[in-house]
Structures are given as C-alpha cells and as structure tokens.
Length: 219
Image (cartoon, rainbow, N blue to C red; front, side, top):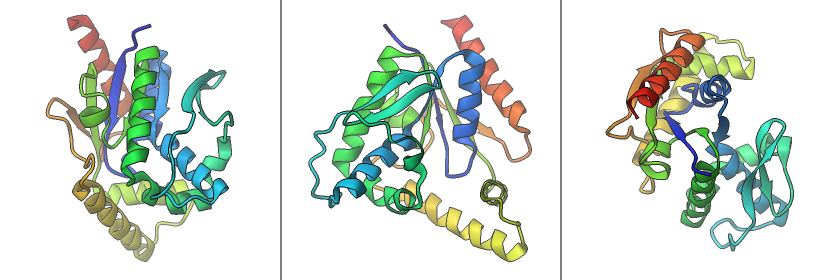
C-alpha cells in the first residue's frame, strides 16, 4: 500500500496534535503524533533503568492499527496512558536529543507513511521525516496565546504572573527547538504557514482540509 501524508509542524502549544487529530478524522486518515514515539522510548528507558545516551536502541517499535487508530507498540507492549506520566514528561526532552532515538523514530514514521494515509504532527515532519509530503503546514500562534492555551490544558487559572511564567517557558522551548543541531524547528520551504492566534479551532481545521482538497485536485 502506498500512503498519503499531510505534515503539520509548529512550536510547542501551537495546537498541532489536536488540529492534526481533527483533520485526520475529517479526511478519514490516521493521526500520527510523533511525540508519542519519543515518549514510548523514554518510558522504556525508565522501565529498564537505561542511560539514554548509552542504551542499545535495537528495539521493536512500531505503530499498530486499532479501533482507535494507530497505537504505539514497544517490544510487544502497548504502554497507552503510561506515556503521559510525569516521569516520562520530565525525561522525554533529554531522550529526544539522542541521535539513535531520532533515527529509530524516523524509520517508524516513514514506515507508517508508506502503509497508511496519515496526518502526522511534530517539529521536523515536513523538513526531515516527510520532505515529499503532499501538503506541509506550519502552524503558529503568538507566544502569549500559546501560553493561555497551555494553561487551559493544565486547567490552571491564567493569572498575570502565571501567564508570564508560561510565556518565558515557551520562549525557552522555542529557542531550544530552533537552535538544536539535529532537525531544528523551522518551516519547510514549501510549507503553508497558518497563524491561529485569532482563529477558532474549526477555522484552522477547515483551512487545512480545504488546502488538502485543493492539492488533491491538482495531483
């Protein structure tokens, strides 16, 4: 089977995953959140007590079809909700910087793109993982708006002090993601940039779905 790929990239808290999931539903594609694969390997390093920089990543990592879409399977286990634990969240950034980890996940994502029709989101999907994706979207929003959304996700009151703190955290994350040596965050040359600061969620989804339909008509 030859799959079709719609790539969505963007900075932290720009709404990539929720948007990608909704677009995938609208197009009857599978949603692939690349971040879950990094979390899966992080979960394994914690379970096995590995030093992420010295670990052997000859592991069985892949995406399996299920009633809910594509599930992450790692050495025959589906970690599920464990991927979102605080321990995993606290270590995933360090694990994701390991070249062997990024190479393994690149392999898994490309295999999914060959087998399925996918909407894949991340930070290097259109530039590194799927440079030939039919459509690439770079989703952005002001750092203040992203901070408000992030606090909403955490169900935390957006006081002025808490908002300033979250803004600084996101700015630091943006700088780290954009300045890293391996696969830095940047839009692909042919990506469509969408600023969602003043757009509703469904407006963003509609724009991407319409862009996809337009590219399909041209192909």
